[in-house]
Image (tube, rainbow, N blue to C red; front, side, top):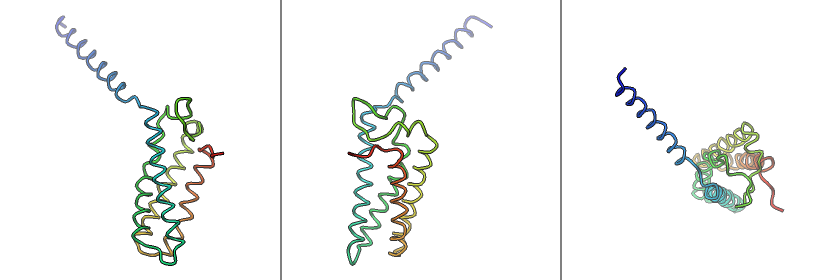
Amino acid sequence: MSGFGRNLRWAMALSVGLAVAGGGAIAKIDAKKAVADRQANFKQIGGAFKAISDQLKSPTPDMAVLEASAAKMASLGGQADAWFPKGTGPSKTYKTAAKPEIWKDAAGFAAAAAALKTETAKLSEAANSGNLDAFKAQVRPVGMACKGCHDKYRVNPA
């Protein structure tokens, strides 16, 4: 092989290596921002669940509010597993209620996140059906999915 061919291969390998290394730098996360985004998303889920609870206390719940709130919960609940990238656990530089168990027990946490996704999707389907009794029946499984994660993977506020 000529010197030119060897040099071309080395140059190509170096370029690929630099591109991969550069991509790794781009993929680095801003943990403080990721935690803030995660907390904002969970506040939206909590707000939607409160709106549902408030409506269910009413003698005539507004199905439009239930549908919108359930849709928000399903949309956000389906993304929750992605809000916990490595490096966003407990830290001295930001506050988080996320326990280290999230990353130590990745399979268990993935199952808990999948339960949230499944149950919030069912809640949204029940809301869209217009069947208030079916909707009410699905609220408890959603609450249990939330509790399942909070009990094991979240520091409870004092």
